[in-house]
Every structure is written in C-alpha cells, then in structure tokens.
Length: 491
Image 1 (cartoon, rainbow, N blue to C red):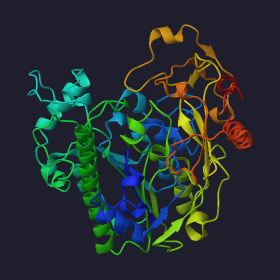
Image 2 (spheres, rainbow, N blue to C red):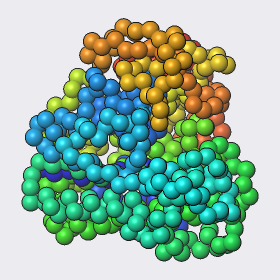
Image 3 (tube, rainbow, N blue to C red):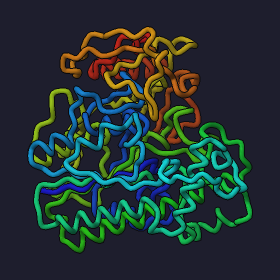
C-alpha cells in the first residue's frame, strides 16, 4: 500500500468549488471532489502552523500545554513509526518554519526529506543592496528584515518554475514516478501556499480581472493581521491575489491527479488533501488569523480523502473530524499499525466507509487564546476569566519560540512540573507563558452554525452554553490539560 498526503497552508474552504464557491478558478479541486470523499464537518485542532504539525505527528492536541514549538523528546511521531516499521516516509516541503528554532525537530522523523527555499521572508538569498522600492500597503510596505527579505526573494522568482511551490510539486512527481512500482511508502507533499504573501505569476492573476483591474494601484498581497482599514479596491485586490495563488495551487494539484491517473494508482494508493487552517480576507472586517476568534472561515477546513480499501468517491461525509489529530492514527491504520495509547485522534477508515462518527465534540484553539469546542452545529468559544489572561504556562523540554530560543528572563520563575501521562515519565519545565494576540479579549461566544452559518450574531442561551462547557471540560480532561488552564478559563 502507498499513501500521498498533499498539504496546503491557509487553504480557504469557502473559496473552493466543491464547497459552493462559484467565482474562483479551481477545476482540479472540483475534479478532486469527484475522485475522493469530501468532508463537510472538518475542524482544526492546535493552531497555527507548527502546532498543527505537532498534532499530525502525535495524534493529540498540544495547544493547552505549550505555544509554537518543536516536537518534544517524549512525543510519538507517526512518520517515525512508519519508518521504524519498514514504511518509507518522505517529506517534500517548501514550508520554511520547519527549519527555524520552533520547528527544527520535525523533518528528521521522516526516512528522507527535501526542502525548497524562498517562501515569504525565508532568509535564503544574501543580498546587501536594498531591493527596488514598491508602492505598497499592508505588510508589503513594512521595513522589517522579514519583509525586506520577501522583496529580495521575489526578484529571483520571476518565472513560475522559480517559485518554491513549483519546485516542491515537481520533486513530488519525481518521487511518485521513481517509486510507483514499489510498495510501502508514504509521501507528505507540502507547500506553504496559499499562505500570505500571495505572490504568483501574471497568468494566474489574469484569471481575476474583476479584482485585479488596476495595475497602477499600490500593491497589497500581504495584509496585516487585524482589522481591515484599507479601502474596498485594495481589499478586492488582495482577494484577487489570494485567488490567483489558489489557482496556482489548483494547477499543481492537477499534476498529482494526472500522475495518479497515468499510473493507475487509485487501486492501492491513498490520497489525502488538507490544510492546517483558513485565512480571513475581509470577512468579519478582519484580515488573517490569530488576532481574532477562530471563526468558521478559519476553523472549518476543506478535507478530501480517497481510501482504496472502501473505494468510495464523489460522496460527502458529515461526521465531525479533526484531520490534524486524526490523520496520524488513520495513516498508521492504513499500513497495519496500531496508534500509541497517547494518540487521541481516531482512524477515519469507518468514516470513509460509511460515515460512522468518531467523536461527539472537537476542541480547538491556540495557546493563550480562547479555547473552542464544537459539536458540529454549535461552536462555543471560552475566553479567560480574568483581564490579565493568567495563569498561562508553557510546559516543555524544548524551550524555543517560532524563530528564537526562550529569553533568559523566561526562566526566572521556571520550575519542574510533575509528569503528564503522555510525557512518559519526564518532568517538564514550567515557565510563564505569553499570549501572542488579543484574541482572548473577545469574551465568551456561542454560535449556532445551522441558523447563523457565518457567525454574525452570538447567542445568549445559558442552557446550550452549559452543555458546551461540559463537552469542553471532558475534552480538556482527556488531553490532560494542566490545572492552570482550568483556572485561566474559569472552569
């Protein structure tokens, strides 16, 4: 058996044709829905990028215990388990966060791996001279080293074949062709796109003349996180750039579908297409993520699966699933392996075969923000009970943030916590945590997605709130949430 996992970053469900969008050019996503199962009630878990990938490896939520960080020494890792069982696990990615301090232990879990550089502000091109000035707005206009580096990188990506996404998928096709006749392999083919900045080539931009009609307007393809303050024309331009990059992703997805058709791979090869989260492009008058609640546009994600064991295609599934924690157990099950006792995600074989439910409720969020729970219809967002969002602690043996080590000051009040069940007897460093956004200031929110699918007005329903609080407590207990989280949330 063989498996291909195609992972996009910041892929918006509501902008894909299989989920009802009628204005984006994405024929291969529609084609994908015809060849696979389309999941309607798929939700995120730990957010954002690297926390979601830690979920993927370990099959369990991690955002209540620590912020963005690497795999820990005690973590189970699905790709490593496959490797140790004789299944070749191969990672191909242009997602540069794997190679910063806060992601540095992931790629080594695979049997083999490849990395293509140049996304966003990846510091890959050493250039002392400043790049040409650009009339721009939003993050495009910032002068930080990261944004300056992005402008440098773009100078060397003037053709589609020069972009990291193209190189990543070309390497994926090479891997598939090289190993098509072999058995027992897992390919994780992962691109940073359509994550911001939404940089792509003119042929994709020309698909959206209604949004990108004024080529003399200031550039905005990298919005700031937070409230929309730009005029409507610039908001539409940014949506057009996102759609352009989405169409590029669609073209590369089509290459994978073509290869599977050409090689008659559907009989013995699982195909999974998913994302870590969505991205706000003016919905709720907001840009991006993290700084606001995990609204449905961000948390209810596109998810497609072809499982050759059941052979179901062109159908939809309604069961509540969480790909980031469910795909580890699903992949192990596909290759005849058992998940570890610490994995809380569920194999989706039964959901694929007959829409058999695997959970009553799902918990999701980011460290220090609201803690959210959904039963598929209602979403409850629980905010901190105190204005200072305390107590909030990090539990780790790997003290790194996104790009840097912990500051020395962060160890001033460090103590050793008692082991958690999943830490395999290890006592972890307990340090004072940081909230990286003001999301928690939105307060408690309850939504009925059936009556209010885009969460325009929060409910005032004490009975439903108590029921959702009960579901949240149960999920927190299941994942061994630390005591400080119950205190922080007033639970």
